[in-house]
Length: 497
Image (cartoon, rainbow, N blue to C red; front, side, top):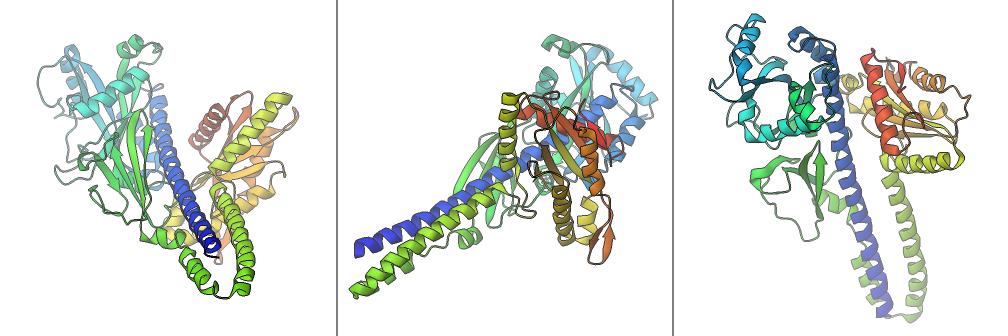
């Protein structure tokens, strides 16, 4: 009898621990995905500046200022402290460079420190402009910034620094930060090879962040009862500490005996971060409560009455197995669906996308991937509260689902970002019209608490196989098309090609 009780106790204990670990692993993957998604958004923002200087003069300060104003940083990029430009100045052009900057309206401008070097990477513009700090700082002198500047220059891609203190902050009092650089090359000149990129470099556009504000700007919300910390590179010492969700300083924390913890190593814009996640009491109370002790006590007590024990064991085991099966199914659903809207999340949508790729390749088929980003959604959350925002997101999900076929998939991959997979399209299906139908379904006002809320969206479309033949290429194409829609004034549809 006691052996059967021991089996039931061990089964309950293992089932609870498995569910707890599954929820923890899901939270870890979701946090990594939210960080990567946010970094990609800021990369696209810098690419917009890069495109701007392909059509206008490098020192057109008004063009840069106007571009940043249209981004509405507070509403759409709240984690950003400042954007700016860094000019690459060979030593022989230093005097000419300083004269040109003074003639452009900066009479006191000079490269700092004012010494003799082979070349300089001088900050020439900062938006929003922080008047208390002069321009002209030679950031090439800082080894941490220089590593990122060189990596961006040589790769032609965005690169972020290690842990730094931002120049706009007062010394000794600022939170940890990092900077993302994207190179700008001379218009009309090739930069295909490493040597060409070095020879034709003009400078860099950059975005500077406080790590705490960057993490606060992530889409979605963190599961309760979890402590998240981020460290620079792969070292988790206080010297590498960047952020902790509960306001800690990065020092080692005493964990409870049953607490789960894990370190995830991420490569973000060419630089390593370590994401450290561990459970707290609230998580353990929600997901770690087990009936193992009660089962053991009941088994010992009931072993006195053989007939009752036999009945209890038979029915108790069946119930335990049913509970385990039900819990497994529930966890599978939680791991694959957005908790607010019930739509497929990034993981399930990626699985559907892979299935559609296999089908399309086998049958020489055609399908579309559509990115939908709600315009100006953040002010609704800020002005009316997250409860109103959540009701609108649920209604958006319902409207989008009503617009598609049963074979299609609507998913939510971020705070106000949705994605649609239009499967098995024929050569005559009007893709643009189908995408515009999704846009139009969000135009009628959303009624929340008796108030009309008007919303629009920017829609980007990528078509298989024209715009990509794998998941990564299609995702990138749809994302770029969506950003083109935003640049075109929002509330419109843009095809990748």
